[in-house]
Image (cartoon, rainbow, N blue to C red; front, side):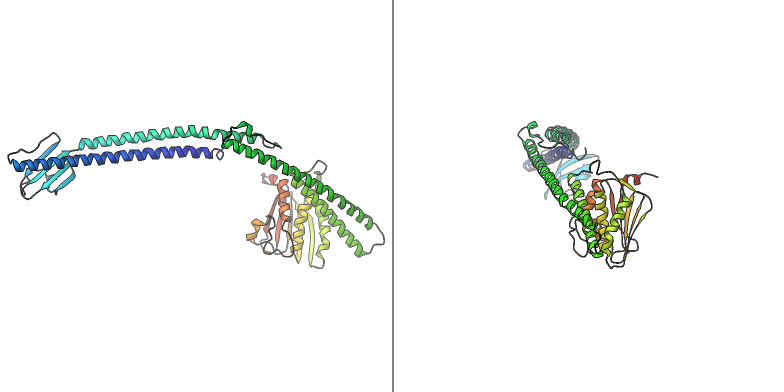
Length: 431
């Protein structure tokens, strides 16, 4: 739910942010203009009044000082400014802001050679009005922010409604094959175009999957036929009493290769179809027996190397899965252990719902461990030839059957431990 409404949240936050930003900018502009215009008007008025009074005073020395309810004027001689309040006496010529006795004044001062003139204007009431205006603008910003939020909620709901409807229809059609036909539910707008693209992509994907299934079924069928012929012919030849040991060994290799190819074909077919096998194939399999057979198959690959293969069944292990899948998974892992271990031992332990393969080979570099299941990846210590697909196929089969596979270097750096857990969920339960 959080990720599905992420775009809606962005739209709401965008409306709220821009609405609040514009309101704040407007309030700041109003306060700045009000303060600037007020100060400029008062300063200009005081200067004009003072200049006019001084000009009239020079023409008529008997002219009295100006006096208003909020404006006070003082005219004196240099050095005789006792009549002027102390807060204004030392001010130079110009217009000044003065705060005294809790009141705020705007003071215009003219200090000429023979006359000093002061004109003060009480702007305390103006400042109080400015504070009230500031609070009023703050309330307006809050109000417009709430309006922006409400508009964002309404607009996001309107904008996201078609997208949410498309997502719900897609969820309801999960697992549906063929054409989805979503476009007919939406108008010819951006969402309608998206629905049309999804319909077309779904149809192409369905056709591709069907062709892939048909191809794999045909290939599997075509491969099984010659493999069956090879296996049957090999069994007949092995039944001949006059076979030499060397010929018998070669026939056994052919039989093992045919069996491995047949198992791999079956496993890949399940993997491509994402199927766990039919009721007949997915029967109860004795893993210990399968491991023993695999060990016998890989024994000839040791040749003259000082390497021993052994299996220890501490506890019987039965798994419901096709025998071919188990053989491919364990056979690939055992084959890698035999291939990369030049001396020492390869031990297989069957117990407690899992199979462990322990070898005394070079192990895997720690920086390569996260990538061992990547297609075509071959580690730094991998020698010889190989496509790098075996472990990728093993991992995909384990994922299909919810098995867990883990590679860990041995603590003494004398090899590798590979663990296949067939019941990982049961292992997580408290004992």
